[in-house]
Length: 292
Length: 249
Image (cartoon, rainbow over all chains, first blue to last red; front, side):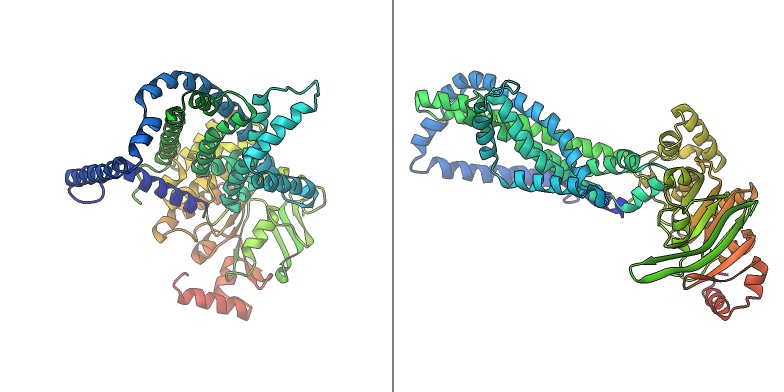
């Protein structure tokens, strides 16, 4: 059953990637399919552009949102500020990946002895998934430094990271837990029957399979986190969103928002493609050459 | 008692309100093979799982090589290292190569070095005709090959006792022979084995003793010739008749 689940996941990946690669599989004549796809795309986007550019407010929108000169002049400054988003993302992600795994493992500990730990993990996950991220950031970012404790930093970036880690660890722990639950109990039984301890069975047998299966939803949360780094801006840290706001406030032109959006997209798309590639490679390694 | 590899005394086991084992007594001598036969649900698998401590017993004792393994506070991991079990559904680790499947437990549970574990694994794989599969992943093997790898995985721990739980039941008929051949080799090499099986002719050929389980008790046991040719109990006769009618004997 465990393998069954894997195969299902794999076939989804494959069908997705074959869609992404084009329409080669859709019919016997591949080049004809590609031609149709290209033509229909051109017609579709041409109609879309026509509809937008013929809208009554288009000249105004074009001036305030699509100003090429404004885009080019604001991009370098926003890109510099965007480095802070990347930094927040990378630091948060490192902590989230580890802490969420710990929370997920704690939640799947069996037996009545561990009830308090399990309960704590459940309360934690429920709470931080329920509170809007922006509120956690505001409460921690404005509240914690006000305590004036010497041992904790007062940097807004620091508390922004703490807030993001708290919120996303709750989400990601649920993803991990779904992965752990999806590994059939017979796998752990097989490992235990060989004399492995519960911890070893978890480490060598259950978790590697669990993590492989949840890579797509994990990536989804990564992308969410990348975007939510912009929320740290409410604390005053000059990251990409704040920087673009500074520009728009100065010029009353909103094109810098587009520049910031462009940077976020440029960062997330390669990550999505990379993950697809990882999944495919793993699947090929395990199943290549088998007629199924 | 002195040379018994396994002694089972009055073992009982219930799941919810269903009593699956209702007082099992069984003794297995070292280097002997005992086959458990009986209908599905008669308790064969549960008995094997109890011996491997995958299930705990409700009453009775199980003694392996003189040591009671059902006593409180026993180190279950240490016990399991000496007892190999192979399941009907193989349960290989799909994310590991064949070689890694075999070397994992010797390295993790016995603390062998990677080199030593791999050398031993390659020896075993070679002995059972699987040397060329060492770098394959389980999903790329046939069912028969997977099951042979699963047996090799258990053997790599150098167990004193092997438990085989209907290891050919999930296989296509043409793949059964290779697995049975491997078990034959093990028996010839003196491996102590407790085998739950539906392969009656195989049980007849390989077993020193055959136990017929019915409704959670061993209704009848004896040498295969006697059980298969002249069963005393009516239930045993009925069971064997049904098996014969199905062409499995």
